[in-house]
Each structure stands twice: as structure tokens, then as C-alpha cells.
Length: 529
Image (cartoon, rainbow, N blue to C red; front, side, top):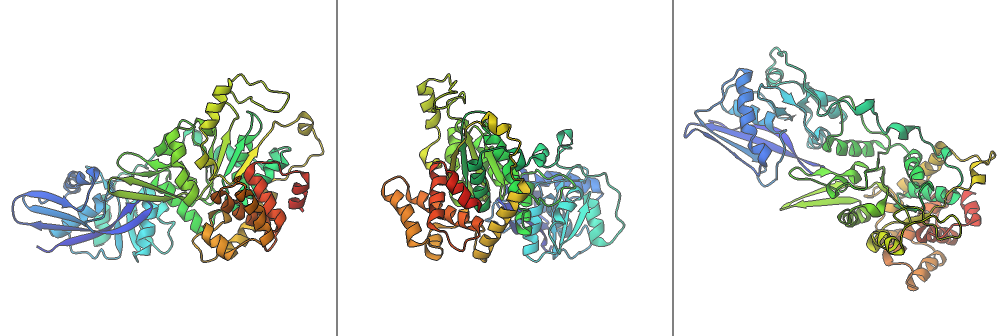
């Protein structure tokens, strides 16, 4: 009896691999053997496939020996989306359906006992992987046809059942089938996109020129940002408006971000490509798996990966669990999250802009300056609170700003005209365009992502500007990692000014942004001009 095969896709994190599902149906002791490093849900696939085939009106070879291999055999395979390919391979091997050519096609979908299909997570990255391997036709559950169609030059067939797939392959009449339910129900309260965050604007922020400029530098160069200050001083207000000054995602970025949301099962029927930078603001009590990624069984991307190319706000940062704070070191440094489970390793991109917001004490009212200090915390509580913000994490944060509450006369200034998000976004877009031209053909896009050795070798500072950074490093006030981050920010400050190279003043501005010292009115006037 010849071996029949059907192509499908296995996901290893965000990377898809072409898998050949091979089936052999031979005389011998009745039974079914499935090999190829299958997880528990995949090992149960033959039960779903057997009943789905039976209820489609075709016999399952229960009196024969059935062997199923998912090749390559050394690649870990998990999930239920292999069902459709397994059922087709067995039917072909037992000659229960006419010989059909499935080369150039990929089959994705979980089978129900009545022969219907169910939606599965990760359809977009699967379709991307198929396209890159030269596959030009994919069969997916009907609600996810729109998602798969985001990949250009691929014919997408949205189907409801195994019977409809067989009809499409053999050219016979397509039978009726019940609609396929989407993966999730309708969003609560018809919530769409970022909800209220779509209505905010930088024009809402009064005063705080120092913090506004720091946010602009962070957006232009992709630099991580720490905002500290007493409660009500505007930390969350600024962080929520940061996505509004980011430019639209490029097509490549849109596909990357949408694929990550597909892996997380966050896409609904009818959702298109994500074209605006995403924003995530998890609660400070969230687990490490929810923020960084992981979970039992199938490893899912966390909030830091879902905010890829966007903004992740970690409000009340010192209240995060210690294991979460420690786990943030890798993504802050490399822009990736690598999760190991036994002998399996999964890597997700995480090149978003992380904003940390922290109060000065547990009650949030501590103000070391004279006047207005209503803090009720004991000194030991304040010290323990600050101790949670560990040095290895703060050394990976590019910009530090301390905010003070807005003064009453600033709030009532009728002549104040804060710049709108569109005005600031135009400058940020111009600065990012300069970076895109400078880093064309490289593996990174922004100054904040530039590797230190490449920065020193190909885009060095002038001797005078470098001396400003070296002086702080030799005095022990700046680590080697901190010096590299100041170097990156100096280029971002120059890009915002439209200068070809960073000046000494740009290096000093970057150093002030790094150390948290106020920029001063003279510096703000210079960068504004």
C-alpha cells in the first residue's frame, strides 16, 4: 500500500516549519501509531479524526494497521491544527478518496466529532511560513480566511468541514455545513482597538516640557523610559499618549505584530492588519507568563511581545513580582524573549518601547522637596519599596524623568498651547526616517536597537562628544552599558534636530536624560530650535 502525505505547518514560537504528514495503511494487527514528537493534544488527534471521517460518511480503517509520521520527526509538534492534514493523509493512503494532488497546498484546522472544523491560533504565521516555502494555496477554518488572506499572493480557501475540503479537492459539489464558531466571543461592550486611548492627545498635557521632550526622544529612537513622581503628577497620562506620537507601522511591522496577536489568539473574525503601534498596560499583579510569555503546555507570547513595535506600560513598577522584574532583563537588552521548556526553546520578538512608572513610596505622596509632603510611610517602607527596583533593570532603562505635580498657575494659563500629537508625530517620523536610511539593510531599525560594537565602529561620536561620556564613566557614574545607551540617545537627539552627527551639546542632553537630571530651559530652547 503506498504512503500518502499531506502538507501542514508546525509552529516553533513565531517561526513556522513545513511538516509532511505521512500515513501508511497496511494489513496487519489493527491499531494506530503516531510518531514525530507529538504533544498530548496531538496524540489524541486520531480519536477526533476517526469520528470526523465516520460522520462525514466515509469508513475509517479500523481493521488495519495505521502508521502516521509527522516529518521531520525531530521537530516538536503541538496543537490541534494538524487534524485536517492527518485525516486527509489516512483517507488517501486507504484509497477512500480519489488520488488528488495536494502539492502546493497546506491544510490547517482542528476537527470536531461531526466532521466540522474549529478555528485555531496562529493561522497568520502559518500562512506566512507556507508562503515563504513556495506554497500558494491554504485551507483554513472559515472565520480565519480573512486573517490568512493578509499574506499576499496566496489563495485562501475558508472551509467549514472535512466534507467541504474533500469536495474542493475532488471538484465535486460542496456540501452545506454549519458555520464555524470564531475562537472567542464578541469583545465586551463592543470594545474596539485601544478604546479610550484612541481619543487621547498630547495637547491634553499641560506644562512638563522636560518630560514631554523625554517622551519624544523615547518615541523617536525606541528608548526605554522610567517616569517617577508622586501620584497624580501625570506619569500614566504621558505614557498613554506615547503611542499617539508614533508613526504608523510599516507593512513588515504590521505583519509581524498581527502574527504575534494571532499566536496569542487575540484576533477576531474580520480583524485586519494592525497598522497602528499596539499598546499594552497589564496590571502590576500579572504573572511572569502573562507579561514575558510562557504557560503550561503551549508557550504563548506575553504582553511584551504583543506590544512589539508599540508601547508596554508597566505602571506601579515596584509592585511587580520579583520574578517578573528579573525576567525583563533579556527583552530590554536584546529585544527578544527566549523561553525554554525542557529540550524545547521558543523565541518571540519584543522590540517594543517599555515605559516604567513608579511612585516614590507605597502611598505615593512622598516629596523630598520642602512643602506638600503628605507621606505617611515609614522610612523603612520607602527603602524597601525602592529596593525592589533593582540596579540591573535600571541600568537597562535609557531615560529617567522625575515628574512633579502641575502647579495651579500652569493649569490655568490661557496662553499655553501644548503641541498636538500630530505635530510631535511629524518630528518623530522624520527622525525615524533618518534612522531607516542609516540602518538600511541591517537587522535593526532604530537607534535604541543598535548593537554597541556596530555603534562604536560605524557611527562614532566626535572626540569632544565622546569625552563627555567617558568622563562620567571614568568617575564611576556611568556603566559601560549606560555609556552605550547615552551614545544611542545622542544620535536620536541629533536626528530630531536634523543634524548629520551628534554634537557635544547633544551628548550632554543625552547624558541628562539618562541620569534623570533636569534639562533646563536653555537646553529645551536649543532642542526646540
